[in-house]
Amino acid sequence: MTPRKPAGKRPAPAGKYPARPVTKKQRRNMAAARAVSLEHRPPWQSPTVVTISSVAVVAIVLIVIVVINAAGGSNATVATPVPQAVLSAVVNPSTSVVDSVGSGGQSGEMVRLPASAKLVDAGGKPMVVYVGAEYCPYCAAERWAMVMWLSRFGTFTNLHEIQSSSTDIDPNTDTFTFYKSSYTSQYIDLSTNEIEDRAQQPLQKMSTQVTNIWTKWNTPPYTQQQGQFPFLDIGGVFSLYTTSYDPATLKNLSWGQIAAKLSNPNDQVTKDIVGNANILTAATCIATGDQPSSVCSSSTIQNIEQVLKTIKTPSA
Image 1 (cartoon, helix red, strand yellow):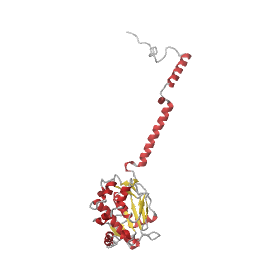
Image 2 (cartoon, rainbow, N blue to C red):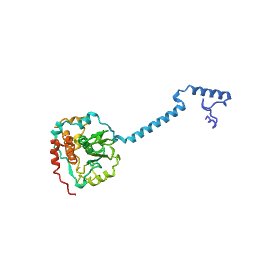
Image 3 (cartoon, helix red, strand yellow):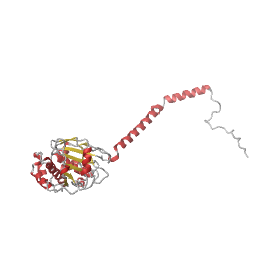
Image 4 (cartoon, one colour):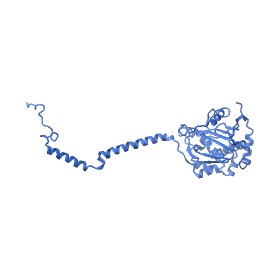
């Protein structure tokens, strides 16, 4: 039997441990070799470059995370200026289409408010108060008629296109937002309040006056349900009982496609938008005493006015 070698006496693996101690001259040569190796290393392998690159990558990742969080995911509000072609189609429908549509067979959903609800500004102009939200599909539908109606009494600036919520009913309905817009008129004073954004986060804060109006009149029997969107008060004369028409009418239609339909009086989209804009116009003419005459004296508006004047104030 061949005896085993004593422990600790086995030869070291070749190349791992030197057979003899390293001399000073060998240490100097090894250090020089390492220095040459470092000098000829590619730039991207430099410790400084590697460190800077790592920091840059981390910074970019953090920026991307912040941007995504700020956007609020896929339901963030994306607002773009309304193209002139779309705005013109909504603001200036042809007289023949307006007269041909009339009320468009729409109910109008107007409720007469009590005499005590009269609402005018310091100069005596009737006030129109709108409260809605960018996520709301019913508000999305109503704004098409609103922009047409209100443009007959004044001028909007800085209107933007948005879509309603992607997670509500009738998702992604193409519409407008009144947020950051302005409006001027000789005949009415307009207060628009988009109090939540597309992600249902707080957006605009109502004034004390608007809050009081909202609290008092945005409740049955003057509206379908308490605190509903959209809410409309026209001079304290009429309120909107519920949204004027079904947002499903606009399903899968782009802003341009909706605008293009407004030249056809037989299209349901036109009947819904133009018909309700005419009803809202007639309600406003009652509040302004038929001013301006260029708008209120037309036979189409006068005929609708006669119907609206028969509406009685509901019992509270």
